Length: 450
Image (cartoon, rainbow, N blue to C red; front, side, top):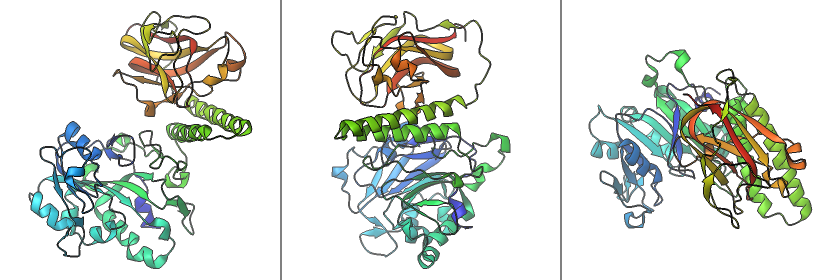
């Protein structure tokens, strides 16, 4: 249990960011990348979204290797500073292999330079890490590692040969700051505990010296799942979550609950497409609505940053809006107005949306919406919103809009969602379901002054 505890995320001195896109191959890193010279990334598989974003946003070059890849088959070409070796990362001294020690010593010999390691090598991580000198491991400020084959966690012989020693070695110099279960293989329960262990587990470690001088009050509490986690590594498989026993408090945050429910909504929405009967469709729709209400409850428990002022005005009135697609004769961009039966109408699809541009950044306190007034009210069963300061919305940061059953049964029923005094220029309403989006009114209540 002492070594298993090393996989439990600890409070981090900096917030986490996601690097590598929104699909498999993206990871959460501590926002502590300044000064890192290079990333070593074994196991490329002809994709390097992670490495390209490191270079583009943070100026960090990457050294890659993978004997099963070919540089001419990369989805994106090598950029200046990026290198590739057509070799396995291994410790067997074969011609087609290179050890981590040899690789780092050859390409980044300055021991004063901090590095980053991102390792996904399908089970070879154990022998490679265990055969790397500690002086080389300590050069990595951040290690992101995908552990494979954890289905053997209850086999004491295998555990003591591979996973246990690896965790003990990493635990000497690093602390885990994030854990994300890959949903490709499911999970098992650890004997004698209440922990569920994913068979493939993505862990982010930060070197212990990065906590120096950081006060306890400045630490960032682990979130499982984290709102920035990708929803699923494998889209066809159900989402997989670490249970609450992975948290020191034993209790999830509202943000994590909303993330879990949102991921399940998205997964169920895909299942809706495959529903073969009206009964199945009805069951899925009922489950979606129940999940959405749970998400609303979790959102309502999130503390507001300040008391609501009494002089709120509708900041959205007559402001420009744009929609993700246009149905029938509805224009794609025009100004916000209240109109029956609806003032805009999208086509059918996932993440259909309306984005309102307030023209400047304001304090936002409440979102008021009214459903379509004549028909098809049930299409609004699962609505979310996100606020943002760049024109493009981030659907992964969506929070649930408060909706009750009256919203679907009666006209003139207004949904009111607390925005918690956020500051933003844009607000987007969307649905993760494959549906049409159409509303008769949208108001954003806030303060004219900053």
